[in-house]
Length: 215
Image (cartoon, rainbow, N blue to C red; front, side):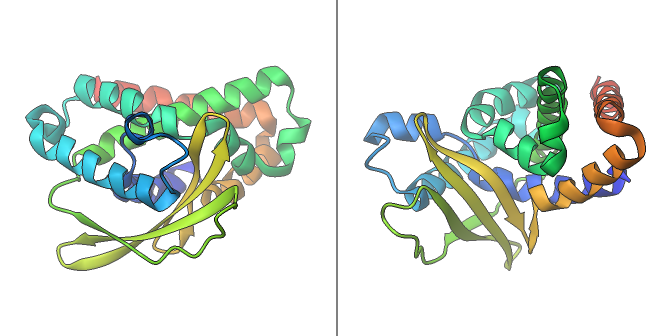
């Protein structure tokens, strides 16, 4: 079951990478309070495409380089705790602190491996920003974009929340599929059949298989 949903996540991550690079650098350069969410996404999109296009090792999918790139450029700007909590849904309240930590660690690692694999798929894509209609004081917003891939526009929407550390991505929608919703159903089924520890074990096994494949 998890394998089918992993394919959907791979697609979303490949497109998501077109807009997830350097939030921290952009905020430092212009001030976190001066950049709106659309400006951040647009800045990120241009930076990630430039980095991948200019670095032959990234384009080739060199595992060590790609993993380092993902950890440095992507992890700091995604709220993995919020994403994990939302994906686990109502079962999060039943999880012990140790189980919550394990879920977040394993799900984060799964996303990292997926992002790393998606880097190789970035080539000549371009990002088009769509009109932004959120209130100026909104703390949770959606930024809509289209990734132009071989002339075809692919839907890519972001949910972001304003935190003390700046805007963080909490979900991504690729062609009508929200990442969190996609995993909430499969996580619920896994927990229903195997319990929370069973889901942790399934994620751990998936990550071990991915680590061996990349090794």
